[in-house]
Each structure stands twice: as structure tokens, then as C-alpha cells.
Length: 279
Image (cartoon, rainbow, N blue to C red; front, side, top):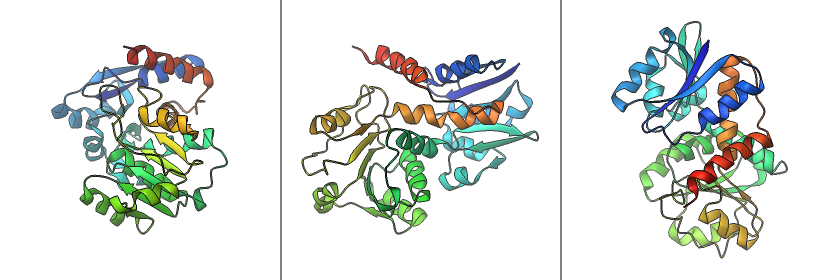
């Protein structure tokens, strides 16, 4: 039997088994997907030895994504650009790696807003960590001409500008209100708003009323930022869609079947998120 897993530290919160075991049942694949708590000091060895183990691949979550990039033998171009791997698979007995976070966000956005015009849009990204890097790279590939980054650490924004070029720029305090008024897509890539985390402190009163507001946080399903945006009348995009869509390519790489992100699957995972998020 082909086995697959997700590794992290901690790993209890992962919904990946719920997603992939749903697809395994739906497509009649004889396999099992489990979660493994792997301590940081053991992650590199676990990934490097995957080709000689009972597993044909794995997903990688916090804090192992950069370790996984260094541990795989053949990272693809996307993984090389990001310096992080979230999906590991075996080809010709070699441990290979990719990163599907950016394409997961794009697929979620395109699914909910198929008419969004990437080539004409101004985007604001809140945060400059790994999630931001993956999303910015994917948006660059779609031809977004203007991406403003709002982040406390200027050095990280400078790194993004060097990597992705002239479309990326820092948003200074004095520019924020004007930037929000001209924004077409606002994306929170920070953990602010997540269960047990403080909300994103951002005054939205100048935000373009037609701007899509997206959050990569999926627990709760509607973060304070999304709730406030919804009250204003802005269209919103929650993080659960990104979680589901980023899982698609891994399943396809492991089992040769491209799975569907269906309403049934969304509702299944959403119900689990609500159960955990409820006080």
C-alpha cells in the first residue's frame, strides 16, 4: 500500500489528512494519509530518506518548509525561487520537492472571482514571510504590475523587491491611505486574526469599496479582517480555499489523479474548522 503523510511540529492542527483521505475514498485509491509529529532536528533526515521508506511522499508544514528545501535532491523551479518546499514526492528513486502555496491561492481566487484582471490590478500584501513570498511569486507570474507590501521589517520587503523586481514596493505609513483607496486586492498573509492571535489592526475606511479582501488564515473561517470588510460591502476570500487548492497537485504527483475541490469537501473541512474554533 502506498502511504503518504504530513509532517510538522506541532502537527495536531493539520487538516491535510481530512482532505487527502476524502480524495482517496472518492477516487478509490488504495492508500492511507496520516500526520506525523517530527521534531525539527529529525526533519531533514526523515525527508532525505523518504525514497527508502514506506512513504511515497509527504506534505510539509511549519516549521519544516525551509529544511525540506535543503533536504530534497531535486527541488523544482518554484521551490528554488521560494527556498521552501511543502510537497515532497519520489521520481526515479530521487526525493523531489515543490511548493504549491502560490498556486493554491491563485486557484482559490480564480474559482471565486474568475473575472479578476491580474494585468490591470493593484495589490496590497500584508506581511512578508513565506506565505507572502509564495503568493507574490504567483501573482508576478500572472502579470500583476503593482504590488505594495506592508510589513514591520523593512529588510524583508527589500529582499522581495530584489527577488521579484519593480512591481514590488514598500508601502510607507504616509502612503497607506492612498494605497488602500487604489487597491483592487488586499491580502493578509500574517497569522493575525487566527484563533488565539490578535486581530489585524488596519483601518479600512479609505479602502476601495470594490477591492477583494483575502486572508490566508482559515481558522476561523471568517477572520476579523474579513468580517469588517464584509460589513463595508467588500467581496471577501477566506483562507480555506487556498488550503484545499494547494493540496491538489500533491495528490496528483503521488497518485496520478487530479482531484476536484468540491463543495462537499469544502463543507467537510469547514465543519471541522468550526468545531475547533467554537468557544
